[in-house]
Every structure is written in structure tokens, then in C-alpha cells.
Image (tube, rainbow, N blue to C red; front, top):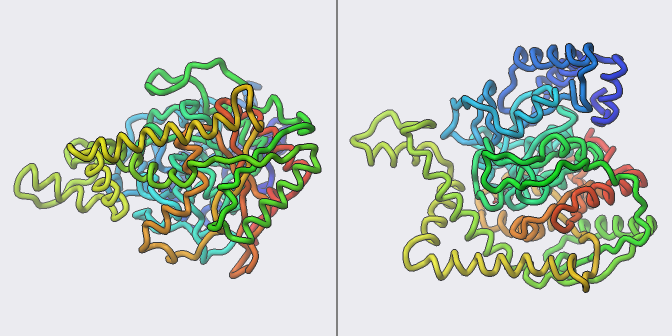
Length: 488
Ligand code: GLN
């Protein structure tokens, strides 16, 4: 049962072959037996209460496609009942008085919450080693990182501890862990998923999305989690759409842009081989490959690591020990309380970003760094537009690797922030442009260590082209079985 897709689980529930309560119990037992550190908060009684409510809906024929489906939420989405820590000591005992919009939407759809998933502190990281609650292990090889910041989400789905999970992507945190754990994830167009109740990191980049086994499941999850929210000032006002509507379209004539900047010197040979193998598979499905260039790709690292810390330094100023979150036990006066509470509550990486962010926003440096970064951000977005839009458009979607290497060993880059930042090279530009992007499993690296290490293929589309991305991914998943492979 734990191997089934959402589509299949939903059919089992509707046919009364299994109850929501039985299904939730099965996953709770798997979570309890797991040693991956993927879950931070589990509460059997709360989960089973939701499952019973779902069973009542199923019995009363008031069920939708996700009613009774178990799901786990990244611990960056606030939940009224489960604690929400954002992977930080700062929020160790925090219980939100309200649910994030995404959580509300899933509750309304009748999903059953399995618990909250580990992540890098305030979603800052690429390895999940920045969590105050310890790293998550990659289920394929427990000596490897799962990727980050949504490492708990990707590991939980890969290890079949949950059939689906929510995640967030600011500079790659849905796509990169999905890639390194061999599961499917999509970051939709910026503004599609409400940020209300999603603990803020870099507000102009943060975007929620799903991680699941298949593209079809991601479509079902997007159907539930997108939509206008007046409580989020950047939420898009668009008519509802069915993201699964184009899944079965043929790929005959599809033009796939292959950016030369995504296949340069930094790309590991085993990742390149798996990605090229996937591109060849798409040719068999009727697509043609077009060489394109995204010349500003390289600049996405310095630009992102100015803009994201700048916004983070502003967002994290709310954690002052006064309103909520950690407060130091002993202090002399108000200023001392701020300092000690923040010094104790935040981890190394978060402090580093607050310092960088405050620096680039300070008087005299704003124009030189922050403003400059915003200008280059525009140029990065224009790169994509000249490939994907307008009368001279070269391609319908863009494909390449997600991560330059397979998952690295736990501890390997733990003391080297810049090495972590460089590994984000292929995901940052999509986020800076606000475009939708996804990762689907497409093979494994060479040189197996204590287990295989998966490779993901990145698929990027123009704004609002999620249904096409899911179609492209679904067709690949109908022709291949990488997405069905499971860790030992
Ligand atoms: N690895 C990137 C960072 O550390 C992206 C994180 C994210 O997308 N949340 O900022």
C-alpha cells in the first residue's frame, strides 16, 4: 500500500478497499520505525482524528480526490496543532494560533496530516545539515545528504514514509532534494501558492509546491494548493485550473531547449550521462532538442546570495525574543535581551545571512550591491524570455540537470558555505525569474557507495506553464520507470 501513487490510493479509498484510518496508521508505523530523522513532530491522536473525519466524508460520499490521502508538511508551514519550528531553535516550542493557507487548503480537501518534516533552518541550505534538530539522512544511502532545504520532504516521500509532502523553494529547495532523493517535485510560478503562514525567508523568491512520486500526483496536489489568497500581497489572481488536464498530450513536435551553460565544466560526468540519457528518451517520444544559451546563468549565484540574505535579514528581524520564539534566560536590559535571544536562537548559517543581508542593505552599500543585484536579476529573467517567449521563441521547455553532482556525503561541505552555494548553480536562475521548474528522477550516479545516488532532470517552463511541465514529465514517466525505483 505504501508504494502506491496518490491516484491509486485515492481509488483504493473510494472503493473502500482501505480506510483513511488504516492508511494513516500504516504510514505512522513506518515513520515510527524509520531512522532518517525526516520527521520533527508526529502526533498519532491528531492524525487519527483527521483520518476518522476523512472516513466519515468518504462514507457520506462527500469525498474529493484527496480525501483520506496522508500528507506531511514541511515544518515551515505553520500548523495550529503540530508545533512549527522552521528547523530552528528560535521556534523550538512554537505552536501557531492559525494554519497556513496551504495547510487550510489541504485540510479542506480532506487530506490527513502525518506530521511535520525536518528542513534546513528557515529553509537556508542545500543539505539539510543546517537544521537545529540534526540532518536528515538520504534514504538511498544513509551516509549521504538528502539535499535541502526540503530534505525531510524529499526523504519522506523517497522512503515511502508519506505518499506526498509539501515543500518550499526559494532557490531550489523543492527541485534539488527531489533530485537527490529520486522523487518528483515542482515549484510553480511565483505567486501561485499562498505564502500566508509559510515562514518567510526571502519573500520575493519563496514559493510552495509539492513533492510526490509522480508528475500526475504533483498535478493533483497543485490543484489543491494553488489559488488566490487575499492575505498574501503577491498572490496571483487567476482563474482556477486543472493542472492534470494535459497529462496525456503527445510530445510530438515539442521543442526542448538545452542551455549550454547547464552542461559546462562544473557538471559531474555521471549526472551529465543520466541527463543526456533522458534527453535521448524525449527524442524517442517525438521531441526535438534545440541548443540555447542562458548567458547570465553564472551570475545567478552572486545575485541570489545578495538578494536572498537581504530579504532574510529583514524578515528575521521579527524574532526579537519579545513577541514569540526563544528568549534568553538572563539579560541586563532590553538591548541585551535582543542580542542574547538572537545569538542563542539562530544557527551559524542564519547568522551569516543576517550579517550579509544587513551589510548589502546598509547606507552606502545598497546601490553597489542590492540595487545592482536587482538589475542583474532582471537580465537573468530576460535570458529565459528570449528562449521561451515572443515571436522568435526557440523552445517550449528547457531541460538540464538540477544539481551538478549526486548527493554528497554528510559532513562533506558542512563547514564550507560557499561550496554549498555553488551547488545551487542550476536552480537559482529559475527562482530569480519566478518561473516554474520541476525535477523528475532520470537515473543514478556512477560509483555507488553505501547505496545508489539518484539523478534528477530539471524541466523549466514559461510563466503559468505548469500543466505543460507536468505533461512532459508524465509522458516520460509513462515510458520509463525511474520514478518507481525505491531505496533498499
Ligand atoms: N540552497 C539555497 C539557499 O540556501 C536555496 C534554499 C531554498 O530554496 N530554500 O538559499
